[in-house]
Image (cartoon, rainbow, N blue to C red; front, side, top):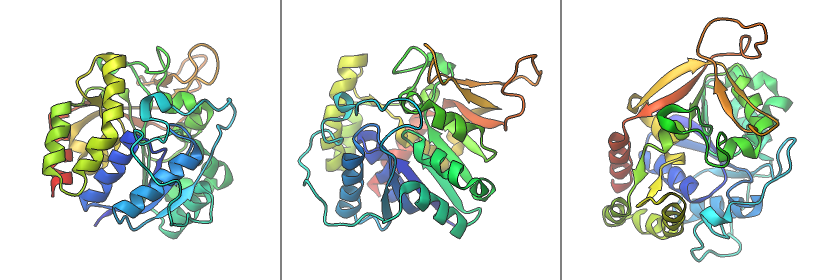
Length: 318
């Protein structure tokens, strides 16, 4: 039985690569793509989702979501990472002749979860604003969600602590209050953070190979990833780029590639450490302890990087 997935995303180059990974797998039934601000404006993110739907014949609904965080001011789109249009500045039409779902992203999530109780997995690879809004409006969906997989955060494993600040990852610092709401909800949640996503690198040679091996997706991924690869070369000295959002899809498809730990998670919502993610792994209750009464969630701590790269290549080359 295929996994029924709502993919919450801000496409975004690595978002697009992750959506195509899910689409190509044959093991994921994309029930919807919900868009959020972040890598691109909400207008560009939604346009990009519709473009992917049209170009690759993805049979799913696209629903536009939040364009601003719950509390903190909205940051600027990360155009220096993803280009002005969010997809590496490849040529894109200004408008796509497809309609978005009339519902807001959070209403789409609520309705779909209620329609398919205990069947929907939420994969969220952007700011968590849409999920938090859904929880605030309809807390009854919490026990109805099968699983939540979040690409975000950093917990210090393998030396990875942050990529926007010394301790904060982009998706979490982009809306820390939303992340804290999502992480502390009593549903089964796994965080796929920088601890593992920065352990896996798609080299430029890997992308060239994918370009040749994947007749359907290879050339498109090659084209959009040139901008992304240049950013990683300039910012981190990499030959290639980290595998962020596709790692969340890989966790759903092949959880055996990952090692995890468990514990309640909180997000710092103010001050110099805003956006920091903290997982409590000891059972002791402290005199001041805003973790002890929160549900235990899973944090990925290690990954079989070669296994993940092999899975991506095999999946998109079929």
